[in-house]
Amino acid sequence: MEIKSKLLGEQAVDPDTIINFPHGIPGFESDTRFKFFHQEGSDIVFWLQSVDNEEVLFSVAHPTHFNINYSFTLTDEEESVLGLEGNDDDLIIMIILHKDEEGTENPTIKGSIKSPLVINAKTRKGIQKILVQVEQSITLTETSNEIDLSAS
Image (cartoon, rainbow, N blue to C red; front, side):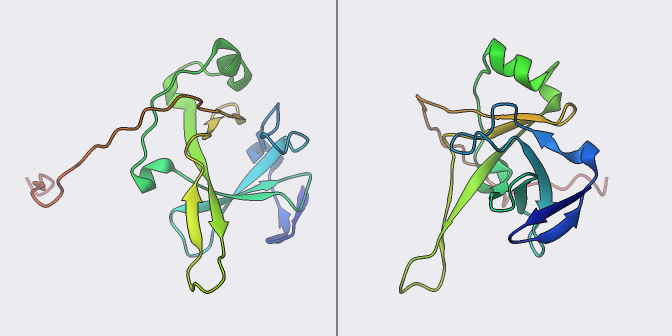
């Protein structure tokens, strides 16, 4: 199957790798089928390209790369849409926003942390979870005194 992307050009994709967002993504409800692409030169950022609209492309990343860990409960409806059978099937990613500002060399990069994407890796179905009331916490991890047990 061939898809078009304004940024990535024409791409051959396996239909079995398409992720379906049955309700779309808020603001993009008519776009329900997406494909992940790896961003060249980055181990962190991926592209999430709409299969049906070459103009719709999101930069996404796993939140743990930014030391963000989520703790929330899905509703019964959300679990049903995703087809989740256990927590091992879900993948949480966040949309990254790039903003080029005049007079600066580096763009401002922000993560959409209050509305992560939740994807069932097994069924390839996804939703965007809107977190209304958020309590933030900070976890500090000391890394200078780690003990390497792999040589034992």
